Amino acid sequence: MRKLLLASAAILGATGGLAMAQVAPAPSQGMMMAPYGAGPSPNTNNNAWADPHTVSGSAAAGGLSGYGSQGGSSYTVPAPGTVVIRLGGKVEADISAGSGSLSSYRAAGVVGGIPATTYKVNPINIGSYMRLYPGFDGMSANGIRYGAAIELRENFQNAQGGNYIAGATANAPSSASVNTSAQTVMVRRAFTYLASDKAGLVRLGQGDGLISLFDNCIFSSQCWDAGVGVFQGNIYGGFYPTNASGGGAVNYPWLAQAGAEYGNNKIVYLTPQFYGFDFGIQYAPSQGNAYANTSPNAGISGQPATGTPSDALIGITSGSTTNRWINQWAVGGRYEHTFDSVDVKAYGVYMGAGHESAPITSAALNLMPISLYQGGLAVTTGGLTAAVTYQGGNVNNQLGLLQSGGAKMNATVVGLTYLNGPWTAGVTAGFVESQGAQGILVGQTQRHQFELSVGGNYKLAPGVNLVLEYGYYQTHQGNFNFATGASGGGVAYNDVKTQAIDFTTMLTW
Image 1 (cartoon, rainbow, N blue to C red):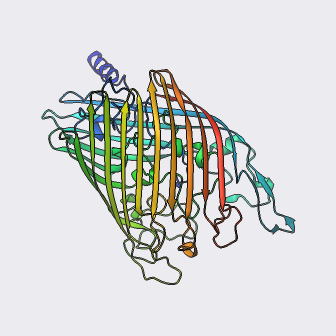
Image 2 (cartoon, rainbow, N blue to C red):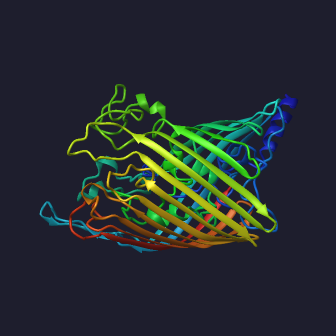
C-alpha cells in the first residue's frame, strides 16, 4: 500500500505544471483558449504540432516570437513509456460599462391594448465564466506520442425559458438562484491524437482545423488581453445586445479559435517541419458530431426525432433545405523562422465545402458551396509584433453559405502587440465587407462592419492576469433592421453601434 501511495504521489507531482489550456446558446465570450500569459489549453505543443520542438523565436526578437500553437505553455514531451495527466482551467470575472444602439429599444405595436414597452439595458455589467481542460499526453516505448484533450465550458441561457409570457411580469425570474439553474456545462472540444516527430500528427474528433492550429491568436492580433477574447469577448455581443448576427456576418469571421471552426468533428493531419515550413490537410463530413444522427431533439417542440432521415439529421446530404454545408475540406501551409532579431511567421489556408442538395423553389435560397481563402503574416522584433490576417471568398457569416449573386467576404484584421516583462499591450482593428442579410437584399445592399479594441494586461503572478480594454463596434446594412432582423422594412436600426470599457481578472491553472 505504501508503494502504491508513493507512486500515486509521483504521478500527481508530475502534473504540477497542470496543463491549461456560441450561436450555441452561449454568447461569444472568451473564445480564445489561451493567448499569451493566459495559461494552458487543449492545444499544447504535444497535440498541436507534428514536432513540438520546431517553434521559432529568440530572446533578441522577444515578444511573441517564441509563442507557437502550444498556447503559450510549452510542456516537456513525456518520457518513453510514461503518461502525464493534466487538469487545467480558468475563471474569468469582468466588470464593464458601456452602451449601444440597442441598449434602449421600444418594441413596435400594441400588446393587449397597451402601448409597446421600452426596454433598457443596465450600462454596468458584471459577468464570469469558467473553463476546464482535462487531458493527457503520453509517449510509447517506440517514440509515438499520443493523447486526448477535452474542453468543458459554461453555457448561458435566459432563465425565463419557455414559460415566459410577454407582458406577464409575474413570470419573470425573481431569484438569482433561478438564473444560475440555466447555466450548464457543455463539451466544446473532445479529440484524440497520434504523432511522430518523423511522420507528423493526426488529430481526430471535435477540435481545431488548420486555421485555428496555424493561428493560435498571433496573426489575428488576439493575444494581448490574456484570453478575454478581443473581438470574441463580452464587449462584442456578450454583454451588450447588437443582434448583429441576425441575417449575416458576425464580428469575427476570421475563424481562428472560433467555435464555428473547431466545433465539428474532423480529421486533421500536420506534417513535420522542413526548413521552417509545415503543411496540413483536414476533412469533416458534416457540421457536427455523428452521434447526433440518432439523438432526439430534446427540448425542441414540434421537431421530428432524428431516428429516421429528416432535415434534423446533422449528417443528411439531401433533403428539403440547402442552408447546411457538408464535406468540408482544407489544405494549407505555415512558415516560421527567426532572422537574428526579427521573427517572421506566415500561413495560408484554402477551404471548401459542398451543401445539402434540395429542389430549388421560390421559397429556397440558391446557396453556393463554400470556397474561402485565408492567410496571415506576423513580424516580431524588439518585443513588438505587427500582424495582419485576410479572408475572402464565397462565404457569409462564420462559415455560412453565401447566396448566389451575394457580395463575397472581404475581411481584414490588423494589429500591434507589445510584450515587455509582465506587461502586454495591444491594439486591433477589423474591417469586414460581406453580404450579411440575404434574400431580397442580395444585389441591393451588403454588410459593412468596423471594430476596434485597445488595451492590455498585467501578469500579477503566475496564472493571475489583470486586463483593461476598450472596444468599439459598428455595423451597417441598408434596408435591414438589426433590432427585428427584418429586411425591406425601411431604414430603422440599419446602423448599430456599441462601445464599452472592460476590466477583467483572468486566473488560470
